[in-house]
Image 1 (cartoon, helix red, strand yellow):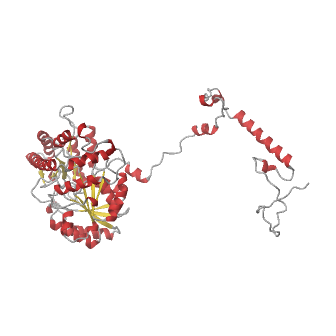
Image 2 (cartoon, rainbow, N blue to C red):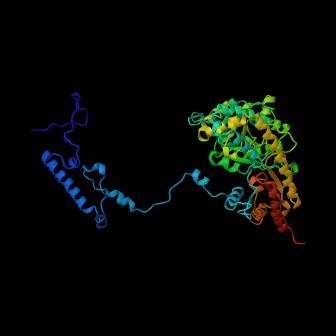
Image 3 (cartoon, rainbow, N blue to C red):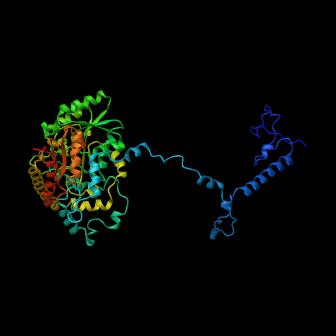
Length: 533
């Protein structure tokens, strides 16, 4: 009897012109069967491969286990599977466990760059302080930290408000009930807090400008706010101009993930480190010649570390420059309410309100870590006039949102205008007094400071003490201050200052009674640097 033969075409086809290949037999797809089956018939083609298959299984079973493993106790079966036949363990895991590693696990290029040890004196000094912190009783020979811009002068005022307002009986009043803090909320901030923040910022700025809460995005600190703006305004490899000296953390905060470059615009002591449009123009043109795309300017007003304020005239010139070059302006105003001098602070928001400038290119950074002494609360603000920037920032805020309990608490604090005004007045007086006492203490040991009107720092000139007069000499003096004087400060080179021998001293982490101790430690370094008589 002849078996039918099918081709690879559709068996239901009725095309009479199709012809099946004459040499193709029916193939059954079973393990090993199709290998030997052909014209020899169904029985012979089935018995031989099946016999080979079972013989191979028997052979593997006899030779799989080594003597060492056969003597070990087999794992007991699960109580829930007593009626199941235990399957033999596969040899693949045994083979894998004996293999050696072929190399170290790999990180992305981004993570590898970020995980490298700190090479900035700013971070090295902070790390050294954490290893050996000064304590009047427990560690009197430890390192005194003058490298951190943190205001501890008015923490008692914050503590008093919290003790009077955050009690079990007041939780419902403050909106801290479970229904108000446990559910999802908008990632870019509660609208109630945006309204409260707008009122607070207006108060801090001397009520010279009104802020629109609809133009705000709240973030977990000013650092994410700055990074978010750079993400929105520039691509990897693009650049922003930034006047020097500037906050040393910007190098890390901006470059790590966005890949945006910072181009220093050098300011000099002969101009009191005030930015000039001439220097800005030169830096812009040089960047263009190198093929860099300049997307904007980042300014700090008040300045950190110098502590000077930008005049209205300079702000006008910056707005004109940005419009002419078709670039953005980011104004970091996080020290706006920490004035201790007699000069007027002018916000970029006030300039935009009073004049007909292109608002879409102006963006403001603010936060509560400096003016309200709440760095641990992690609250920052993006205030922008550009709807596209706001739309993108609202979506990005999901990666850096402020906790809802923190927001609920701050709504109550920031709307307590009696407390805010009392705090602002007292904090300003304490800042001014501490600044005067600290600079007087440094002057007594022969160290001069540049005039500061705002912020928490003194910009100290120690250039006559460095030898040689270069960055190496500056870093050697910094090492003496850290190791001999046990005092952590920030060298000017970490702030990209073009002149050697300038240092940033932060005075708001001290108590008044600490000033003589700091001055005495600095005096030892000053005397060690003087040439012998």
